[in-house]
Length: 68
Image 1 (spheres, one colour):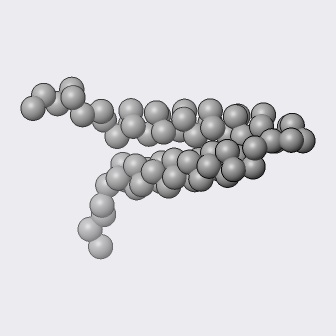
Image 2 (cartoon, one colour):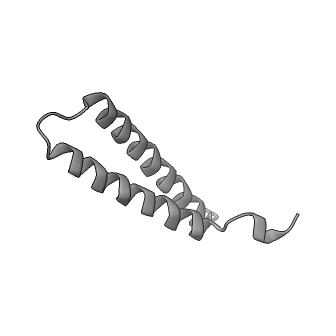
């Protein structure tokens, strides 16, 4: 298997952060309207939370383990 098939952790982190920002922008836009689809908004917020959790996971993987 070629090493270029698997994106690096830095690339994954950048992609996740970009998706997170885009979702945040979409959520803010949806909240500006008084009659919004609450179910759709909840789903977007959950998706944003999952992205944030994945971002934290990738960040933790980027930090090298230190011998105590």
